[in-house]
Length: 249
Image (tube, rainbow, N blue to C red; front, side, top):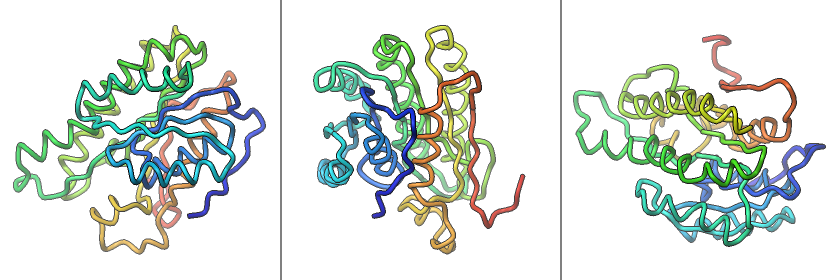
């Protein structure tokens, strides 16, 4: 894995981030990118072996990461995340809700279990984490929440009705939360990437040539751009498409 990232002049020295789904793919890339720019990172996932791999990559950048195993579809597990950030680092400045699951089928073949499983992680998990992390983010004085949505959070595609519904729910929560916490100097962003070269996309679209997909490191750079620039201009939603895709499609 190429772990070279852009270096941002403002940096993130002294900041603490939580990154969910940090064991692989986009979450791993975001965690490494944040650490390479000075942040201490709580790495959250269900799979310890994958988190340990990410932690080693973080250390190779000279950064600091701590593994924290949690099932984010479980409300009780979500409560442990800010507690772990406080225990290990004493503060929290940035929450990246990246953990997600893809369930793909025609709508008439989808089950209630498919719907519940998708919403439990993609929407409810992010809701629980935002709610539980808000007190520490307020204490930061300049907190960030970055929710990794999807192009399916603003569009619809065949065989992705259940996944799209969960990502639309995440987008609705993101928009409302941004207004609620503006007074607390917490900025809430949504990233809506198209096809990224991850296992999830390979499962959803096996027909795609992976060489033309967005790289996870490119999503990490977009997150870094958002959280290292705290001026008077704010990007609420960032849509990221494949270069081969249709502009403004």
